[in-house]
Length: 234
Image (cartoon, rainbow, N blue to C red):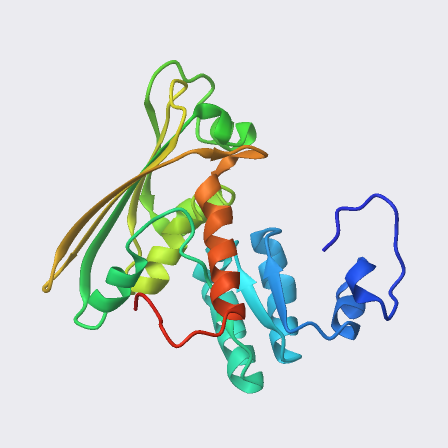
């Protein structure tokens, strides 16, 4: 909630205050919280925020592939009528995926390529990867397992799953020569077959994620705070 090193007590001047626990945060009566902490933070804090009527934008969306977490978040939202917002993140085409879900999506495949330095070293070691000298597949399998193993790298998998109603098949590659984070996505339904390729510049302050992820969150906040009669996209 706060990255400041000096503790600031709660006060009525919320714009200059810093909360270090959820009780302080709720006392401030926020309209919207943007979560960017971790999947564990989503599990522990988001249902409580929703039950208190606070809208939440979830960036660690991988947590919502956990069925218990999803049910708890959904029930809390229904009870309080507070909303959960999920930015499109580091990919394109989520509007089309949601549209195709109306007739059923047959298959979703995600191939992610990132520099080897973007992955947590301990996770790579658990997978038996101790040195990457060229493009190396470090994971293939279900999207549910992928978001658990790579919680800081592949939130797009959960976003695609929630939008399509289908758990993606995932392939993840580490490449020491890559300077961009690349996602290749295939979606197949009776209405359309879509191929998407996105090449993202890593965020200058966090190379494990893409610059587009931050820009997507900014765009969501703009949409929520700008009153307009013209809405683009579905």
